[in-house]
Amino acid sequence: MAHAENSITIGRPVATVFAFILDGTNGPLWRPTVLDVARVPGTADGVGAQYKQGLKGPGGRRIDGDYEITECEPNSIIRFQVTAGPARPNGTYQFAAAGDATRLTFTLDYQPRGLAKLMDPVIERTMRSEVAMLANLKVYLEQHA
Image 1 (cartoon, one colour):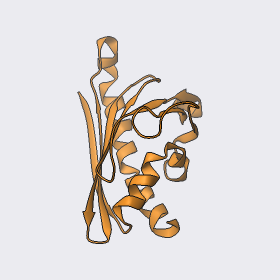
Image 2 (cartoon, rainbow, N blue to C red):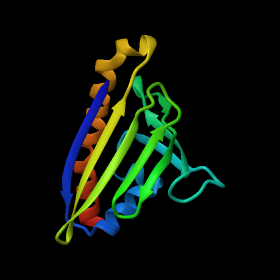
Image 3 (tube, helix red, strand yellow):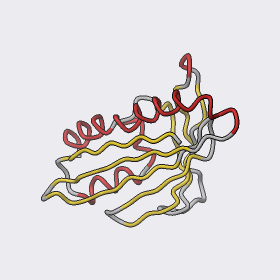
Image 4 (tube, helix red, strand yellow):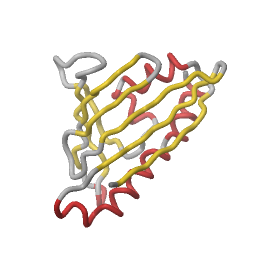
């Protein structure tokens, strides 16, 4: 199983960080691998929200990375499942107050099946890169929020 996890403290209140992450259209502001993202019209806010997302793939070509919010507890946790693309991990953002700041942990897990197991090292490397982007989120929110 591929697994990646990272934690960071962001100098902004939990409610601010939670709301920013929950709105998936903010992805391109801190994740340079996101080419485009839009919430699917008619889907709920929070649990059930679906996002169409294009990511930079091998050779810079666009690959799908659509996802759906599967759990949402305000200012505490957001879980999602990738629903389109070559790898479909599930992810979790966990939020905790740290004084006036927020301690954010981002986890990705993927259970490859069949021939995808051969790609496990590549997928895990990509997932580690994705969770490392929390550093970009910290910079963005501390400068703009």
